[in-house]
Image (cartoon, rainbow, N blue to C red):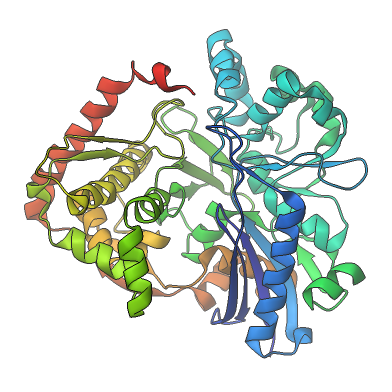
Length: 504
């Protein structure tokens, strides 16, 4: 039996999952990673600890699987995009990893928009510049901690760093770098002139060689083998940005399909043979299928907001659910289902970890009265997250036909009531992708191509992707959600001038 290992590093967990060649998940190990928040807006990871957590997750997944480790034919990766992970000349991290929810570089982005740098950059990358992208963070370090850049030899995405620790080989990869404003989308390569536009010409030599997601980028070293149980010499493929991984694991192989991922980030995407360059979408990047571009609208405004709500405002309910051996999510779904949408007019802006509207925006409840309780607040959280997705999807639909359905994955896809809100607010059927670790699955698909198990991504998708059901929109709720979405937009517009007072 040939198996594949996919390693997925998200915002809060590192996961290692083993799949057979038909996409059946044999085992998964998911371990939490600590987020360091030294200041408001700063989110970091200790990279040595991150590596240790990854090694333990890999070892645990192999132990749980019961397979012979030599049955693993290939390894690859999925990881949260953007952020910044730097390694020094001594081969060790030169600073903590900076996560994709970090907003410290907002002033650098504001400066580039004021002086017109953003327009010059767009001509090469077809992207807006975001505070969480590596270029913005590098500019922040250059201005605030130049000594860090001086001791940095390599600039990585998170998955590149873990691959480096497993193989000792130094590479970057197209989907992550092109999604981070680091690639000239016309030439498909790193670009010295592009780095000069950011004022980062000294960082150009720190960008490792680019590889495609399914290209072999080294083999498991003896040292890594001893820590993880992976046999020495297993081929390791480059891997991909997690939005690519979840997309490809949802069957995003042609221009008809459209996907949403509702996890820490709100990810909304489709692929095309050409980028969208009319300025109506935030991000164009290179997709894991060579020759395709990923057209993406995204922000850190999705289900991560609900995790905050549970752990901050539902501690008693969480403890009680654990004592009873039930999931707290069963309770949250019951609460939300108990309130009809027309009976709760509270608005929640899901900006606890950043915003797609204003770099200084914060999470906000509006419309609360003495009548409301935690159930009403939670319903507003579910809806606010959906409305952020709706904003992104409507931008994407300016550039393509409405799809027959949209494929949804991520935490929200496990909630029937939440999926129904997505369908009703969008008035588009929602396909629910099979419940497994899609980031790791997409990584495993790349590993399978590198190992010769699959011919290409469409072949891998045909063999591994499962749709468990479709939820259809209810026409009678169309007007209700249109009015609620209009209120959501009005609150955002009304607060845009106030956020400057909350910049710290």
